[in-house]
Image (cartoon, rainbow, N blue to C red; front, side, top):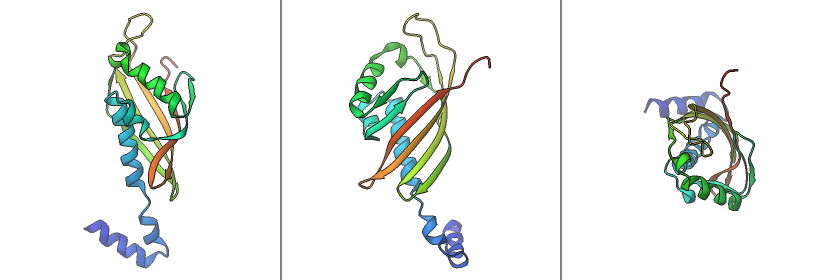
Length: 157
């Protein structure tokens, strides 16, 4: 209730403030949380539902994919891999959601992954701390990820 009153007061004091209050941030957050849930549940269709058909996706080792069909192939492979599935994600932290306009946003997030296993050697992988930067666009009323870049923090630097 206090927030509504504050927004109403700001709307009276600051020209244009009432229009700025409805930023779409809640929709962006919900779509990004769906994306994260898909990864945690190893659910290809859930992840793909949050991606634009022309997604540009780059992971921490430099694999670059373009489009949902390339993403589908990768996700189907990863989600069946026992070594990948052994990893347990820590909590997701959304550091910032920056609204670039009514239909564009950037999400900065991070999380850690524990207990992952190297597929080639079968040995445990050190805990991974991953940062992610996702560009989202509102298309036909739905927030979709159009560009995604992940980077793992380096060990020993």
